[in-house]
Amino acid sequence: MEKKIPGLLVHTYGFSHLTFSLMMSFALQYYTIFLTDVALIKLSIIPVIFFITHVVDAISIPVSGALIQSTQFRWGQYRSWLLFMPLATSVFFTLTFTNLPVIYGIKIVYLSLAYMIAHVSLNFAYNAQLGLISVVAKSVKDRMRMSARNVQYGMSSQIIYSYFVLSMFYRFTEKSESWGYFYTVGILAVIQVFGYWFLFYQIKDYDKYNPAKILSTRMSLKEMVQQVIGNKHLRTLMSADIVSYLGIFSLQTVAVYYFKYVIENEQYMKPYSLSLAIASFTSTLIGPAVLRVLGKKNTYLFASIWGTAGYIVLRLFGLSGPYVYIAIIVISALGAGTNGPIRQAMYMDAAEYGFYKTGKDASAFIMSMFTLPIKIAIAIAGTIVTAGLDFIGFVPNTAQTEQFISNLMNLICYLPAGACLMAFVIISFYSLSDNKVTEIMEINAVKRAEAR
Image (cartoon, rainbow, N blue to C red):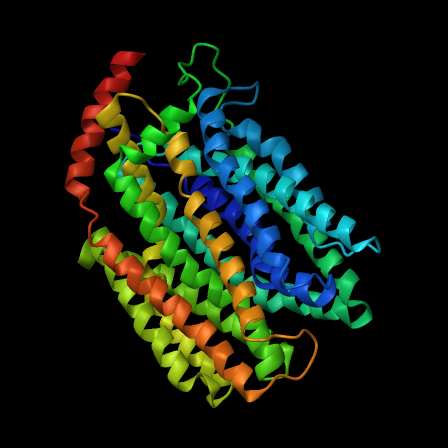
């Protein structure tokens, strides 16, 4: 019988995600408006920047997963990546929000390069953190426990972000808008380093350097493609996640535009973010209860249809005032976020299925696929939102017309509503039950024992 994972380790695992999420939350909400309103990059150029940088970002995800799967350094297979990569992330993520007084063309190049390097290094650290589940948790229950705690810490970070980070940011920007971005991101990037380093220390007894350890051979591009294309459950899950995250990120990207240009008071971002954070965190507590009643697949279906309905209601009543807007978002998030705690566990289920079908343990690589839908969704959301703003005639730092406001609300509401509806349709084809996973894990445990 496997020993239960210590609570401190489970919480440390979640805490590393909390520090990572603080940094990413700011980037998600403010990177686009930093480009349009501070760096003054033309709207027609931003989709091109997003396309190029996110292609590189997306390619690095399976590459990093494959490298983690097939390499081992003196600090362990997964731990090693938590030591140095967060430092690179810290430096280049800060540069991503630096508005240097340089020639316009050079500014575009350096912002793009900083973004690419920051996110490539980030992918290595994040995928290593995800892959640790395969080393630490040996049962469905423990994997679900780590997955749920990871999401709960990520959601609780939003409370800290909305209450402290945004207050800090707006205080910095009172003196200089440009330097306000730089100081805020720099502080969050350093905090991210310490979160990963704390996990690095706590996991030392679980992921040690072992010269006798049998590692997967380095995966070729063909093998990577086969691991995804040949795994029907992984394909379905990734497809549903892409459109589901698209709804989340598009809504987050345009929120600041709503408060700055529709309400004409950007300070409402603080109560908006705080309310959304509390709702999202509460949804992670509700999620396990919904899971016990409905199971993983039906929980995902429930969350998707709830989100679809919520965003349609937002279009009908969202212009009634900032607090009505926030209230509708909160109610939508309470139900739409209930599938958050199950996602990581579902990818681990898909990894077990992949080993069962192919005989090749590609857990780290498949767990890295958990990140890919997020990155793809961010790329699509950023591209669609900026292209949409350009299409409806957005001009930075000017008063907007009623027609623009109406079109902006269409962009805010109908994009996430349609995305949630698509996720509902896609996940209905997912067919890997918990009973089947338990059966597969028992068979795989025998295979792994025989390979030693």
